[in-house]
Length: 303
Image (cartoon, rainbow, N blue to C red):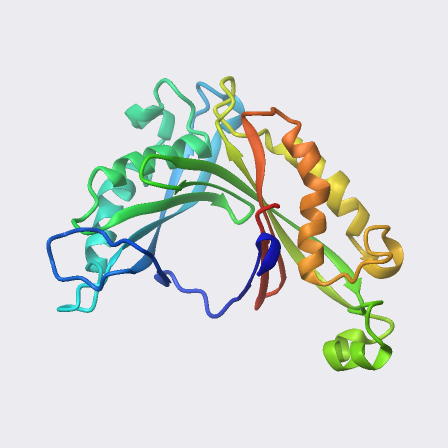
C-alpha cells in the first residue's frame, strides 16, 4: 500500500509459519535451485529461565520466553523444500533450549557474567549462537525473543553486512468509530462502508505494537526504559483514545475518517516526535502496528 502502510489479513496462527516473496537472489549451495524465489520459514521454541539480578537488580525474576528464528533459502526442486525443518528444530534445541531452559541466566551462562540478561542482550546472544551453525543453503534473517505477550526484542537482517536491533511493546485500548468520508456522498459512504457507516458507530478492542530500533543504552543495555515508553504511549495514544468515540471525542479525527489505516498513521505521527527525542542518533521509532480485529492488522514504518 502507499506511504509505507501495509495491511495483513491474518489466518490461523501456527508454530511453524512459512511466507514467500520473490527476490533477485538465492542462497548458493551448488544445487539446482528455483532461482529468484526465496522462502522464509519461522520456527519457535520456548524456555523458562530466571534472572538473579546481580548486575541489574530490577531484572530479578523469571519468565517463560518465546524465541522465534526466521531463516531463508531457495527451494530445492528435487525435494520441494528449503531445509528439513527438523534440522532447524534441532538447531534451536541445541543452541538455545539446552542451555537457556531452567537456567539462572546471569549465574549459569558465560554470556551474562559481565552484561545483564536484558531482552536485547538475550536476543543478541541467541542470534550469535544460531548464525554460527546455520544449515547449508540457508540464511538467518531474524530472531525474536519475548518475555511476555507485551514485550519482545528482535534482530533483523537488513542486508549482508547490517543487522537491526529492535524492541516492541504492545498496548491496548477500546474505542468506537464511524467510517465516513466527507469527500463522499451519503450514498457512496453507505455503499463503501456498509454497516460500519452506521451513524452511532461501532467499537473495537484495539491492540497496538510500538517498535523502536537502535543501539542499546550504554548504562542499561536496553534500547529504552519500559516506563519511559509507557508514559509516552499513555500520553499520546491511550489517554486521548481509550473509551472515546474517535469521530466525536478526538481532535485527530474531527475531519479525518478514522479508518484503521488512518489510525495507524496518526499514532505514528503522534509518537514519533517524543520517541525520536529520547536519544537522537541512538534510538528511533521504527514501526507502529494496529490490530483492529483478529483478522485485520495494519503496519506503518514511517514516511
